Every structure is written in structure tokens, then in C-alpha cells.
Length: 265
Image (cartoon, rainbow, N blue to C red; front, top):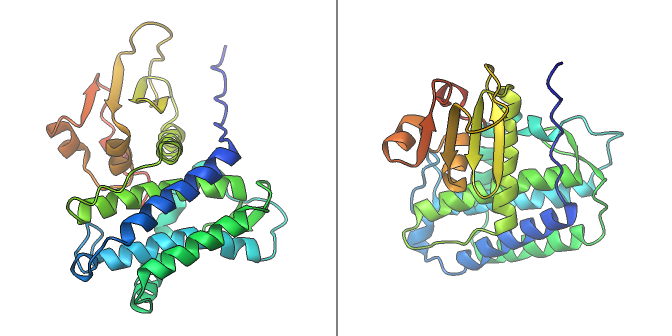
């Protein structure tokens, strides 16, 4: 008998909306505290400064409202699990737009305040089934907001890495959604049941072709924490470095995920 087809994970749209608003609110609160010299600090994103990164975060959130103001496509064309694999094609254009916005915006606090207010206003009335024309492709609002949790959480981590002592908090629901989406993207990229990837407390997926275990401890197990997983999945952290620093444990001959990562640019 063939193995049962895995069901696509669903996300509560009300919780996802709240998570996006909450995580951007955490970023906005942090931006108010930054001095000019901190805004000029480098980040781990090539030649981006902290100022560029904050502009990008605002642009990431503002894209929701801009998409809602466009004509609605007839139907979605981009599945949620395909989103991580299509971002690389738009990375250069996104980087240029972020730097342009940073250069044209002397008051980042005002930008974040305006962006947060606009987001809340748009989300107050938009149905979660509304189809959006996004840069990556046509998606429902519910799915697009899940992608915003990934962008917000990953770039909040970039911000914390760039500014010593900043420690912007992570909204639990936003962190959970981001972790789950990228875990499911791994399972979609390498379908199978020989390896179990555990990211407590948010996700467990099985992937990689090979003998499928049905009970007991699987022969191939990978386990890590949510932030380490997001760094691995987005290329912020190399697999070998994570192993060396004991940030990830991997046991079994099919537990080496280095050839599958990163999942998203």
C-alpha cells in the first residue's frame, strides 16, 4: 500500500494577522530607541546597514496594503510552500528598493508608525480569502501573511545580530508560523520518511527518501531550536558551523541536510 499523502498544514488566519501586527510592533518599539550611530552599523546582509534593514522591514509590511489596493487576480497562482523557492529571483530588486527607501526616509520612526497604522487599517476589513497580486505571484491574503511572519522574524533576528544588546522580542505565533513554513518547505523539497526533523516546540516533519520508520525512535533524526532552524533555512548559518557549535544535533546516515539548505534566499 502506498504511503498516505501528507496533508498541507493550515494556519489560523486570525492568529496570523495578530502575529504580523505584534511582530512589527516589536520592531517599531525597537526603532524608537536607536541612535544615529546604531542605524549606521553594518548587518550580516552584505552591504546593508541597520537603516537599510529597518526600511526593508517596513517595506515588507507595507506590501500587504499595496497588494490589497491593486485589482484582485482571478485566482491564486503561487502555493504557500513554493514561496521560499521563488524569493531569490526578486532579491536584487528588493535590496535596491530597500536602500532607496532608507535613503529617502530620514525619520524611520515615523515610517514605522505610519506603516503599522496602515497595516492595521487594511487588515481590519480585508477577508482572508482575498487574492493578492504580489511580487512573487498571486496568493491569498491568509497565505501571504504567513510569508510576512517569515520575513519579519528572520529580519528581526538580523536586527538583533547587528545591534548589540537590542534584543527585539519574537512574537510566539509569528515564530511558530515561520518555523513551520520553512520546515514544511524542507519536507516538500526532499519528500520521504527516512529522516525526522524536530524543531521543538513548533514543528516535526519527515523528509528524505529511504526506508520509512513506523514506530519507535527513527534511525535518522535532526533536532534544533527555532531560531537556529530559521538561520539554517535562510543561509544565515552553515550546516557545518551549526554542528560544530552544537546548535543542531544530527544522528543517522541520512541526517545530513547540508545539501538541501538553504531553502530561501
